[in-house]
Image (cartoon, rainbow, N blue to C red; front, side):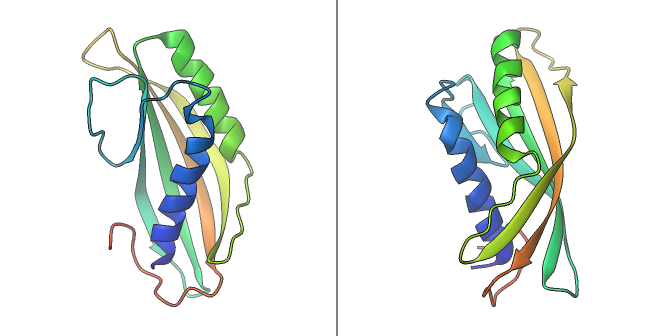
Length: 137
């Protein structure tokens, strides 16, 4: 499995830690399966750059959609606490996350609160032989 696939699994697994506590209906990669199901979180990696040192540098966006502003910011605070300066070594990869920014994005539907948290990070290989680009299966 590519390093980026392990990274995606690590992030989704980490977000699942708060799913029940905050009543999150869905956590998905890149596209929400049902845009009418609130709250939901969509994770995307707009940039992953391989290096010559067995490391990939990445940007990660975590989009949070709810119909309640208070709930949205509560979930964002929980997500921040999951990833700020978080190191997640396992048998396959060694990722590290750093928050860059977070804030509200205007949604055409004024009943929807859309927040995005952007983080950067680095993921190091640890016994992974098939280091590829995210999205490859």
